[in-house]
Image (cartoon, rainbow, N blue to C red; front, side):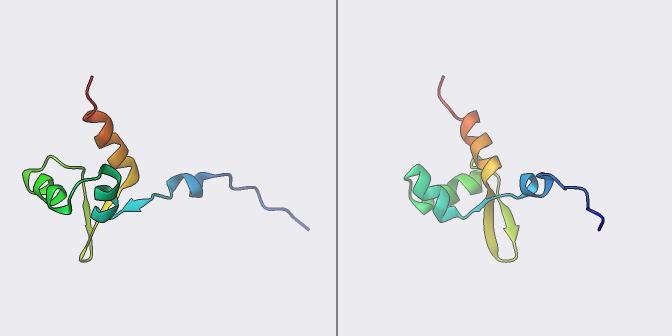
Length: 71
């Protein structure tokens, strides 16, 4: 019996968690209207349109938060 090489964690590391606008608003404790105003002004976290749904990558959200931290 031959054994196949182990694949490691590359597949897991490419998995991305996607957040909805409601998820973002719940985490930041802001109204959804604020999120959509930020989106219109292009100051909010980057979002992706997937079909008719709007999704935000968790890693993009964390990076956006880090850029907006007060010093």
